[in-house]
Image (tube, rainbow, N blue to C red; front, side):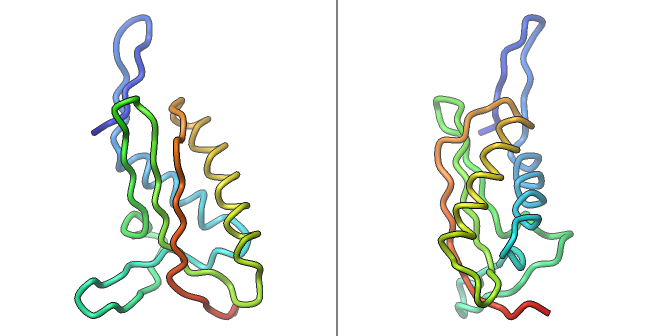
Length: 119
């Protein structure tokens, strides 16, 4: 389902791929996030995604009430408090995605799939 905003002259439709790409770019800017993770269901392997394929580590759902739900699969930096990383990610993504889309974020789930040392 796509996000919809009713303007005075018509309707604005925002595709979930646009939200996914923007949310991914905001997420990798956050302190402590090494990158997005792709989890292989077949063999349970976690793979660090490059910047071009951030969309695979995020899923976006638009609810019936036209609110956004985000799921992030991330790889975090070793030695940084995971709770602090999650709080930073939630506040940055919530603020920037709501300002970008004009839609409200209902829920953000963060799945930490791995830990990597900072190079």
